[in-house]
Image 1 (cartoon, rainbow, N blue to C red):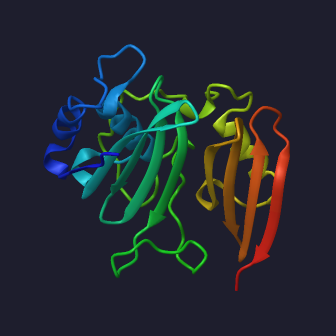
Image 2: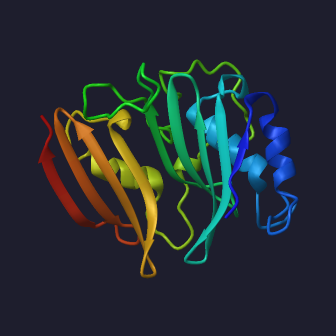
Length: 215
């Protein structure tokens, strides 16, 4: 597996060039959006501009027949983790954490308020988005992944409905493949409580729900 690291000054040039090596797939391929496009989609969803980046990683992954791009990037205030479907740019996973003054990501259960979770269509409060890329699909959160009947946004709302008062900034959610089944896995951290859950992506039924008190 190759992982690419770029400076903020030349991030998109480097991402584009990295896709031309052996084992990579050109962004011009009909069934693959390419590393450059995948990075733009993630940055746009997070409300982060190129100028705000301090670090960006992009790698092309395959799991259970699904090809996607794993994208990790940082600003001075926050770090982000995305998975973007290679075929159409659908966001499969989005997470954001605030970076503490010591330079590491703050634990959302330890008193530091997490940033707005990307995927909700709004920018996180940490970075000030002034000219985010506009080429990403505007309704990616409402699209349904290949093989699933439940969209990312619908699964997120199902989980939040179980925790009155919790919002986008309190939830982490990703799509996983388990023995051929598509499952949404996630956590909600709210009011000193931690909720872990799994949702069947084909039926919308909760497979798992657990609650723990965090002092």
